[in-house]
Length: 460
Image (tube, rainbow, N blue to C red):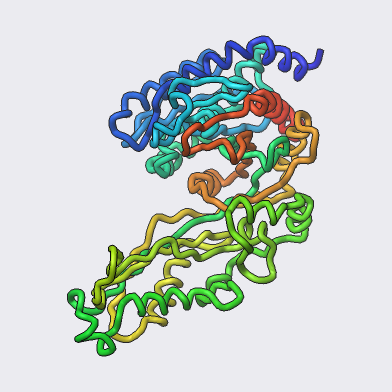
């Protein structure tokens, strides 16, 4: 019996035991954003540490931070083999509205081979899977094919507030050859995906002021500037008629989409009609010359997220409002710099500022974009490992969203980040009735095990 066959037998034999343990983990209300759950956060971190100890990991630490603890552990006895840093998070989102749950969010239930609980998919279930892979390897072989470090935080759902500082302070201890993350999704049910790039994020708030207070539109209308009109002019100046962003310099550092990437996207047979139905729109819209996937994965955006000002109550109030404002965010792609983009936005707003108003621009938090080359050996090895369990070719995808800590790993540790997720986008993470299809839990155990052997063999 091969090592992987022995592991398969181990995971099958201990499945019920593992699921019972995972239910215990999921029953802890580790909601990072609510202060009343501070003790639950410590409880979850300690539970995770004990699970790591039982699995055979060493040097387990519950590291205190100015916020919630960071759990670290390692096993470093595979001489001459690569080191893998496994990242994940044990904190979860709040559960409101509670009345929309079909079962209690912190009393896990399995129905039709689907596990329902807050955190089951994002990300406790996937983190737990990685711990059980180590347990299986250690129980069956007494050793690991690679060196492994774990870094599991408790603040991902509130922006990983203290993790960059922790990573910088422990840079030498966290030194690795690659970072492995399971906090993303399959491309579709039964269709695995390696996510090799994420967009970055930045944004600003524009506040426009004209008069010292609201003015009577009959007395002052037509004689002084209306800040909503001024704001509308600024917002309309951000794009041309083709959906192209009209901010000077905005595209200067955008990395072009490669021919290999275009071919990979075309191979996905993306259903544009399906996305229209999902979004509830009659037609798709965006930058001319690019497909929907290219626009949402590999091209930058500038979106108006909210507009405010004036009277919006029932009926009508004949005023010229004193102020108006808007919130704007930009999704960024390699090699755009969020700080440079903010300055370009400021310059554009100043250039297009109508007469008669004062404008204040306030910038928001920033996250850099990230990419690992599609042809990187660790990326391709991940695809091969998926295909040992899923009867289809692995999709190589970018994600339109942002995980700022990934760019932090890239910048501080300077190693590739491999995102191998096992969730489904339909599993209601952040919403009532979050769930995790246990078929993908079972396959995930075996995929990750195979991946360790794959990358161990790359070092030969």
